[in-house]
Structure formats: structure tokens, C-alpha cells
Image 1 (tube, rainbow, N blue to C red):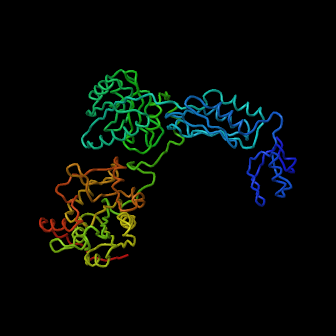
Image 2: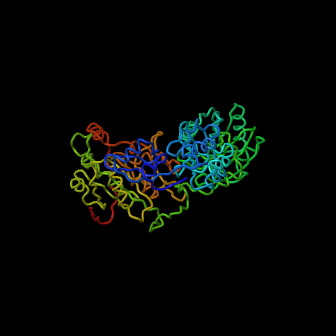
Image 3: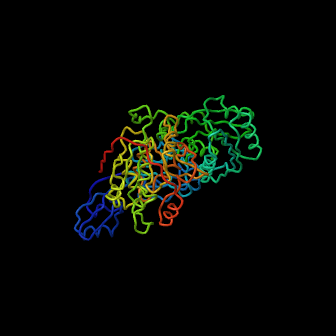
Length: 554
């Protein structure tokens, strides 16, 4: 292939290497020079142009790219027409992308002129998704190099394995303290995982975390024509002789592999019973966030056999994210100055009270006290320390209503943007010595020190109880106590929302605290709600005495 400058008349049959602009003439890169182009160049006063010319034995970039792409395309792959030296490959159907790494490396090692790139091997893909591309760097290549790349491709260097498992059975084991809603969420998340493969949960069972009970449940599910069984244990698998593997063996099955170098996903178990795969799911499989369970599950749904070497090969790239419930995190939390858990209280009192129709609800009185003072006094009476009050709308008046109380004021200049800005302001003010923060709403006057202290007592970072939420009758209320590990995520929320979505997202870290009454649910947002509260609300007990207050407005 010849490359270099030439006069317009000598460039006939060549291909432009660069886009040329001169006067009104624009000739794009890759243009083949014909008689019309020669005339246009002369009329524009162009004296020379850089072109390439194919020689005997060369093939054009589009021909080479198309030939190589056709060679690598296997079952379930479509090749798009080559253009500008590029041929893109697409998935013909949904499935798992299977890539021959050795073939890919062979192609890319032939010559720097030839490149072949794919998505990650074993990635789930959908119909029409671009999965690979062949790109020729120059405008042409020697035919022998093209031929070598075609040979290097071998057979089915790239294919899409279709999903073949459609009917899945799920067995969940139970232990005291495992809430039914955890099981329900697990089933919902699992159904969502299976949906892209066209698979469904056709049967589910819930039994005690006991070998005999689980073995019977697995046998029962296998008898219902399922193609795969997933077991979610109430307690993580600790050993090959633990409840879940023992129950598989009791059904005449085998434990093929236990453990995986993917975090989260370490405690996955791969087995078989009744001629069908049985997966012992790690705890992270309850979360919708990608984890090692996805890597194994999706391959199995496509009927791809997973060897022990496949599992052990997951290590590079297997560290997916920090585990919030890890007892000893890689990034240590600040240690409280005392032996007790130090938890701050953040009272949000910056809102505009738009639903009240004018008056500031924080200043509305109940039994002679402003709502915000009732809530703040209860926070001061609890074991929380320090107490931080976030103000914004009518900040001077709200702070005056709290005069004499030992609180730290933080003003939120962005209060009009919504609740999230006040959460961010309050969390930012929590001292480094605090292990967590309890976010309280200033318009919830039935919150008392007893409720707050229950949340603090349930908060146990060393046991993975990192978010404490009051619950009554299946409903979750306020306030919510957050471990410092979630402060970064709370600082990232936006708009007129709090952190409720984070509670759902990190369900494995949540401890639900049973409470009585309406304290965790009643907020005073409207004149009607205030009137009802004034009719029914009993007198609020005064807080215990504290040291001389020191006011520190921001």
C-alpha cells in the first residue's frame, strides 16, 4: 500500500487520508479520487493531496473488516455492513456473550492494522445490543494479513448462548428475627433477576433452618418439574457440612463447589440434586445490586457449564464493592471517645411549611410549646449527643423558640430546594466522634426519649445493625438512625426526599425496632392535623436537666 502526497492528476484512484478544506471545497477523509474530484481539487487551487493507494495483493479496509467480522461471528451474532473500515457485530437474541479469549488475542496479535474488541465475556446481552467491533486502522491491508485473521478466528470466536432454563424453584429457610418482608423482598429481587432470561419462579417454599426440613423442601420442589433450585438461607453457609449443603447431599445430590473469590458473593454454593443445579445463595443475593451471584446465575440460566476453574478465576475484578455490614470494614469508622455508642441527633426544622397554608408548623404550639421545641427537648432527654438543629425558613424565629436548649444550630441556605438539602446540612455537622446520626423531623411531636433510646439500643455496628428504623403494624416510621458508613450516600441525595430509598437499598443492614403508639408516624403538616393533635395530645413530659446550654449558631 502506497502512502504520501500527490498532485491531483496523479492521485486518481487513491483515497484521501485527511479531510481537506480550501475555499468552498470540502473533501472528506476516505474519499476515493475520481475525475470529478481531480477537477474540483484543481479548481480550488489545490496543488497536492495526501492519499493512499492499494497495491496488488491489498484489500480495502471495508472488505478486510467485513471478512474478519464474518469469520468471528458465531451462533446468535449478526454482522453489520462495514463502513469506514469498521464492521460492528450485534446480538441476534438475548443471552450470555461467550468470547473465545485465545482467538481474540490471536487476531489482535497478527498486525497492528487489525483490531477486534468485544464486550466482557459472559456479559448478559439483549437482542440488538452491540457486542463487538472489527476496526481496520489504515485504509487497506495486505490480503495475507486479512487471511491470517480469518484463520485465527477459528470457529465461533463470538457467540450468544440463549437462555434455556425457564422454571425456577426457590426455598427460603427461617430463623427467629428474620422478618417476612425480607423474604418477600428476596423473592421480588430474584424475580427481577430472572426476568431478562425469560425465567420465572414457579414454586417457592419456606421452612425452618434445619437440615431435615430443608431436605424435604428441596425434594418437594424438585418433584414439581423445576429446572433449577435456589436456596436462600436465614443463616449464611459456614461449611460444607452446614445445613444447606447437608440438605443437598441428603437428596442424593453433590456439592460441586463452595466459596467464591468475589466480594460480595463469597459464600455461594454450587451443587446438584435430582440431575438439576442447586444454588446456595450468598446473603448479597437478597440485594438488587450486582454481585457474584449474578455472575453464576446468568451463566447457568444459559446452560453454560461452570467448572471449579471458572469460579476460582473470578478473583481478578472480583472485588465489586465495600460490604456495609462487614464487622471490620477496610476503612475503619471513628471510635467514640467513650465506651458507649455515641449517636448524634439531627432535628430537621428548615422547611417552608407550604401545606400549613402560611404559618410555620415548627412554631405551631401544642400544650403551650412549639412543635420543634417538643421534639428537640425529647432528643436532649435521650442518650443522643450532640443534638443538631437544622434551620432555614424563618431561622431566627425557630432558633428563638429553642432558646436556652443545649443544641447546635446549622443554617441551611438552600432549604427551599427540599428536604434533602437539610439532611445534607445536618449530616455534615455531625462530629467525627459520632458513630451514627438519628435524623428526626421537627414536626413529629409524639416522638419521645423512650423511642429514641430504643433505636440507639438496637444500633449495633459490630453485629451489622447499621440502620435502626421504628416499626409498628408492618409500617416503618421516623426517626431513622444511620451508621456513619452511610453518610456519604446521605450527602448525595437531592430534591425533596430523605433517605427512605437507601433503607430499602440496604435492607441487609436494617434492624427494625418494634414501637407502640403513633409517635413514629404522626407528623403535623396541615392545620387539620394540628387541630386534631391539640384535641388529643397529652401533655409532654419535660426533659431531664442537662448542663448549662451553649448556643452555637452557624
